[in-house]
Image: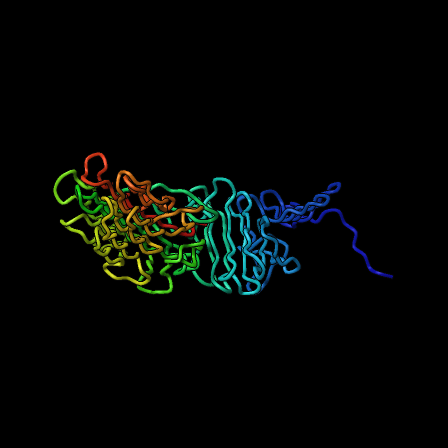
Length: 475
């Protein structure tokens, strides 16, 4: 037979106060303000209000809440493109097949989440951690990115000022700093995950922060730098007609960080053409087109002006040659067309790799009842054509690029001049080069078209202004 002691209350000898008291469904250990354990139904209360509960030295606890750690979800590896984290949980994230975005829960003081690179692929496909609503990460209301293989981080929500703060990271501290280039200047548009800054006049490309995600590739920007086209010439009375203006030089780099379909002039394979930006300001120069030929004097236009971005300069287009004054076309980004039997100017001057332009065409030296044509100005994609006894040579073709997010044609040469009694051949106007008695198109670097004999209303026309476009990955 088992021994039993049955009792409802145990009292102290000294003052007869309860040490253990049973009353209905409630059992109390301790007396008065000294109650230390209260068992009431399914609820057990340990400790007094305002007091603390301590574990003995060497003891351990279970089931008493979280100790600044998370419960790792080992049975649920995250592979989907997006998922929402829950406070108190840690996630192994597998980006082997795709980048993943983890949405944080709404912040509340003490909330905790953690993430770890399951397959060591964060550098190839990043994990983006996105705060909820207006919450912040490290005091900044932006996504954070984990982009180092094997990276892990633990975030604790502290307050509305700093939001989620990283308390443990296997590689480096994560904050909500934008992981890509942040910059201002020019007209800003977007194409896919890229930002494009277009400058049609002088300005400043101001970089406030550089990419921390996949650097240095994402700090290597794409760009197009087109100089101003040269002015076309008019002919002299009873003498030869004038040459068309050469296109402004065209230089381009298609960075692997912000790819698109570029022109044949992509200079990325040549390291000296590449620009890796830093957090500073880059002055931008957009070259003006060369002025049209005046009605008197040498009868030729002016050369186009240089366009620049950082270490890259594109040379202005050369002017078209005129009669006996200055019959040869001038050299430049692309050369101007010649007059009479004179040659066109040389392109790619000064020389760069790949070539920024081509030579102008030779003028026609024949004389047939006052009919002869000036040479066409060189273009970024081809040389200017030679004039004939009847019509001026067509300007050299330009090139096409998709850097602004769609097709853009630049760098066409101007057509050489023809006599007023002859209809000129069709020029390559879709690349910005001017037709006979027509100016080059603004912001294409097109060369100006040549004019009639003797100037006046048939003056050689001005070249088109240049353009600078910068493109980079923004998200």
